[in-house]
Image (cartoon, rainbow, N blue to C red; front, top):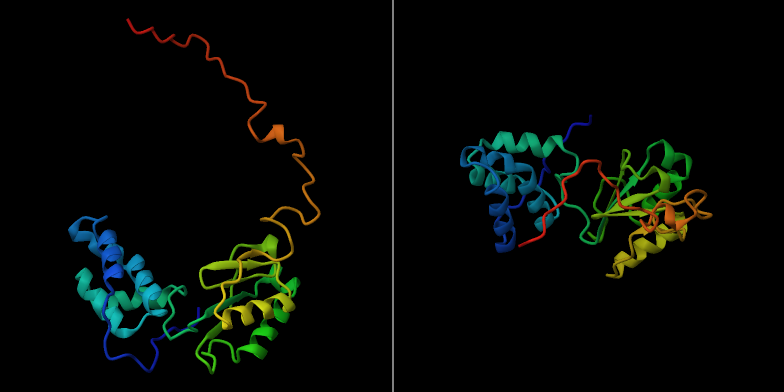
Length: 221
């Protein structure tokens, strides 16, 4: 596991936005008061959704909110790689899967596109709009190669359509997520090869099940 540390440059302060604070209190209320620290992960996530990343002042604010030592919040934030410890692109954080299925399907070409259009890996682009990373398996191997961009999966990618996706984000658009080769989810590209009769799975062929010796409900008087 790589060493993860907070960014060298930190903001002077952090403040919860009203909607973030409301959601944070909703999470805290799920736990007994003496276990409010259990809400640390969802609140870290809420902070990241608000700011784009997790700063030291934010960690301090969360620790105060939950009544726990700041080092404990720091330990959680640095352990889970889903928490960004440095500022990321305002338009898109692109995480390209580089694990074996995606690698065999051309993820290296996707990374070349990111490098040419955005810049160095793990660094904020010159215009502040993009950050790209190479990550481990994201669990969409059937749709390799793929990338997670912000909160969504972009699958069955080619260098050409990834380049267009980046251009769309740069222009302020919201490119559609999901497969980019015409299929709906993870079905075979050429169409289904089994369960071809809809009656096998749509419930139309099901019949009532009779349970032996089951009591018969009495009619209302």
